[in-house]
Length: 245
Length: 385
Picture 1: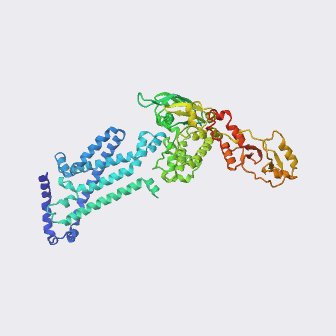
Picture 2: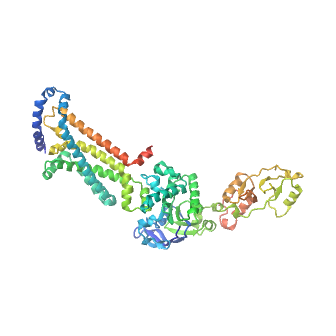
Picture 3: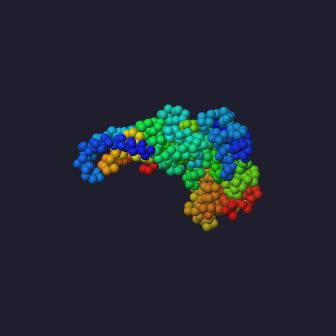
């Protein structure tokens, strides 16, 4: 793994060092933490990785959500499925991330697909667990009443249980999204693109400006997603605001 | 619209060999009546109630609604035709009050406009401002929430209602109010109601008939409240109904149900000799004459000093004291007497005219009559002693 990783870093690194030495030598020659001149001239090179990063996050989280949500619905009515699913998603979650990328490489190659698969697998545990918690928190009396007035099991699930579990489900999505934004910086190790390219490029160990810019963009993305999801939660759970008011 | 509910050997057993939760229950609730299932916890009363809407499935026997077996019905459809009210209310927290009330009409596919009109009508019926319809359940008090629960159960005008300790979580003052409101409502809508409670006083107040149940899901006695109080069928029922059941009977009676004493009446300006003569008659039981006006409305009691005058004075010596109406519940009348520290109370009709006199002695005789006492004289509370 280590040799493959270094090879990957070296591969993308060479051209970068050349560019840097030709355009921006005056600034980097000094040993500053952040080089504004360089940042101003080179900000454009972050556009493409940022878009890639967004794609990685959105696709991975949506994929992970679809799978985890489906698993939760399966386990909701079949209680015997719960222990294996919790253990299974838990074990997947503990695999070290970079190791996971390289484990997948023989099957899906050095591609964004590899990164997306690994990233979505990491969201499973959080989203699955939060969905289960949300469903478990629906008051028994509400389910009893729903059944007693003649709702079918399916109607109870979609009209009562899932709407009431929404806050927990979205809370899970928020955690999953924020951690995926951070994890997606590792996609570059399997040539998956994203802001990681700008962070892990060869020679960056001495050149912190790029790390700070790419890292800063990643933090910004995480914050924006978090706020958007929080807004979504408020929008779809008006009854919670009404009570607070 | 109401339909009878009939249990025919209805049995519920959890597990193959477990003891029955409901054991061969057979009883009929006539259409439009309130049947209270009462008993200690674990007696199977809630299970018995739930057999009706199949939220608990029968192991054996049958339950018939309007002569039709619930076994033939598809559970979800059956439940839409049966009102369901539970102690924890179980309103949908994410739906507005109006949406909660319209839940069953929505399941039945009513047009929006019709459901909306029905919702407003129901909120008014249960004594809630229709403007509350826009709120969410958590913004309402416990009492208001339970009113919404009743409105939701009534939405599709079901012939049968199931109510599982509906007022159990409400504080005593509001519980009393909700019970009264419910009885008023029932007088209007006349549903067949199965009402579960562990509170015998509530059962006596609410029920047209009461089924007293005990552990093992057996009915010990199925009778009207008065029968239950006068003639408990078993020792268990006697214990459960309580030592104060004679007093409880008072809660079931009105002043007009009892034989009152006749008041010796006096009018202003009448010769006192005439009044004294009236008092001396052997059949007179009240030792004081009651002063009344021209409309026979009581003004006060005449004292011996008043009678010492030539003519009956306009201002009697003794104040009127407690006055009860023929329509008053006997228990309240007794309370009035005790509170007024008076032996006698003037009883008036709806127009305020004198109808007779109620005395502690009358009530005492009633309480010690055979039906009220049986074998527990010592246990009967007799505050007049």
